[in-house]
Length: 130
Image 1: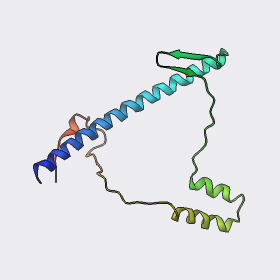
Image 2: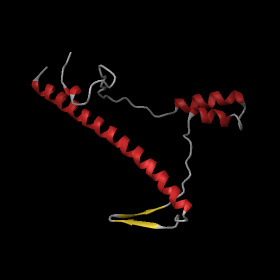
Image 3: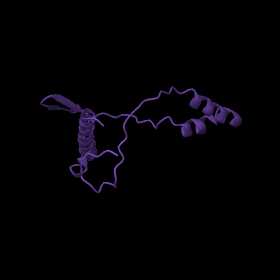
Image 4: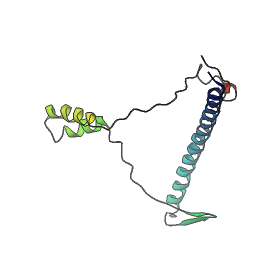
């Protein structure tokens, strides 16, 4: 392998490590924010503050109620199509829908770690080709 390829792979590994590290940090931050969101909304509901608009330096925070929908999965479609379509037709419809999905082939690099999270990101940034 030539040196340019090796350098590109080293850079790819470094970027992959950074992305993994940032994603781990973002996951922790989202979890903490969700916990605080539940606490703050409970306080707002309890104290009749749901109409309050809270100003922060760059924006405004408001209390909102939103409706969350479950995903539109094949299991969901199968269950509820059975309520309006003959059971024999449900499997056909599901297979038909699956076959009509758009597909495309893409090339990517997949990183497979030697051990499960035993190594830290700093330790796993070594470069080796087979």
